Image (cartoon, rainbow, N blue to C red; front, side, top):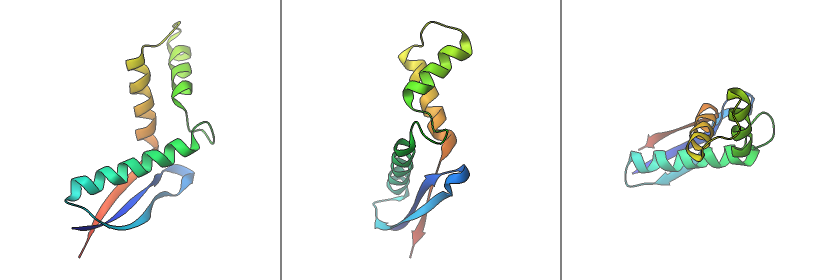
Length: 95
């Protein structure tokens, strides 16, 4: 099956942009590739333009809750939430 992949960052970054048309076994596989591409885009901007790195998410957790340290699970969850709040991705099947 052929799908056009769209991925990118929301806000002033322009949202999801076409990355091309590719062959996949199913829509789920295509969506995973689109999601991974969006995450890579996020990672390329970490630490700039308001895009938080994992370390910045940890610092934010510590400051927000007035604690001495944050658990790895809490940092991972906060980081994933931050990524999900910025990324946009979708696929369209191509005939």
